Structure formats: structure tokens, C-alpha cells
Amino acid sequence: MIEFQREDVYIVEGTCPFCGEESVALCEEFDSEFCVECDRWLETACTDPFCRFCAKRPARPTDIEYIRTYKR
Ligand SMILES: [Zn+2]
Ligand SMILES: [Zn+2]
Image (cartoon, rainbow, N blue to C red; front, side, top):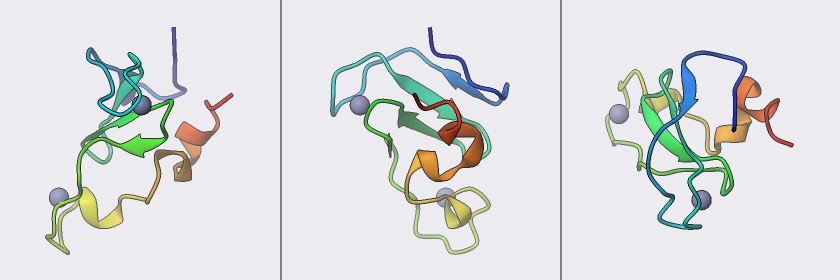
């Protein structure tokens, strides 16, 4: 069971389309799902430069400190 340090990041149902693992998590801060194993977002960022989610979303989930500190 994967647990994060923050309640706004949590594992959701589903499998990663890239690795097939049940390691999909949702990051509420950026309103996007990502794969813990692949360390990649599963949703492409929109092109709106003022989008409050995508505009500030880091390239990789582990660029976010509270996600990186989970990583083994
Ligand atoms: Zn994956
Ligand atoms: Zn967006």
C-alpha cells in the first residue's frame, strides 16, 4: 500500500497505461493523475498559459517535494 505524506495525493483505481501497474495516484494540487512507478503524468498539460493547474505543473511528479519524499 502506497501512502503519501499529504492527503491531497492518493492512489486511485486503475492501471498505468505505460507499465500496467496499479500505481496510479491523483495529485489534487495539479489536478492530474500520475504513475508512481513511471514517475510521469498520465494527463497532458493543457496549453492555457494561465491554467492554475498546468501552468505550474513540474515536468515530473517527483519534482514535487512531497511526492519525491515518498519515493523509495
Ligand atoms: Zn506506470
Ligand atoms: Zn490546464
